[in-house]
Length: 311
Image (cartoon, rainbow, N blue to C red; front, side, top):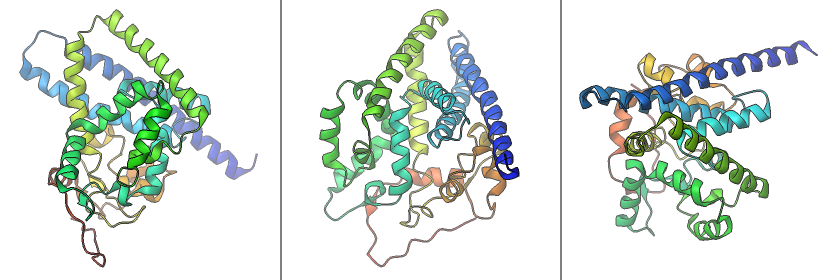
């Protein structure tokens, strides 16, 4: 083995070990925080636990994202298993968002991913309604429902949704599925249902508390998904921002806030995103988060240049 290949192998093993520890910690936190929320203490003590749960679950999605790109773990089967495990905690199948995410890197800031702009041939009321449904929890809800239904009705649902692919990036996904993807989703669904039944039974969790936990997480995750892209240049790579966060939140997020760096260098693991990012090329996340809740507006004129600002 050459020196270069040896170095790559050592680096790959290093990140596999790091990610193994991270997933174990995430599973423990997921179980521990939900169990804590079953306690009989005051709601005022449960609110910070719920907030921590949402921050941690954003990191669970970040680990799913590492597995989407195939560099969560150096063994393909382990990468799939860890992707399935974190996706199960998240509330989704693994293969569904994985196939979608590959397309996102190609379609970023194309018409189907311009949620904040209203095109001349679109209904403003419809666009605004869909936008707020998405950021207020709908993005997570769509993945959750799709994970339950798609394995059983793949052709019917995909044929229906592909009619809307011009204005909806998720509809494009169904053209990209292969037969093995559908079969894998069926397996993932069976394993995920068995996992949830087992945990709820042995932990004796209350389903209403789970609904509250995941409803709040659905809002937090969905409202965070577009903050990296809205108002950015219409370019598949440069159409993203790096956003600053306090160190402890950034670590819980697994550096997912460095989204521009990820689009520029999708092969860089989460562990290195902060180190290779230009910290002057950022905005604070809270500022972008507020902007997410502004309603969609008409598409700028054809020659309008959308520029990024850093502060």
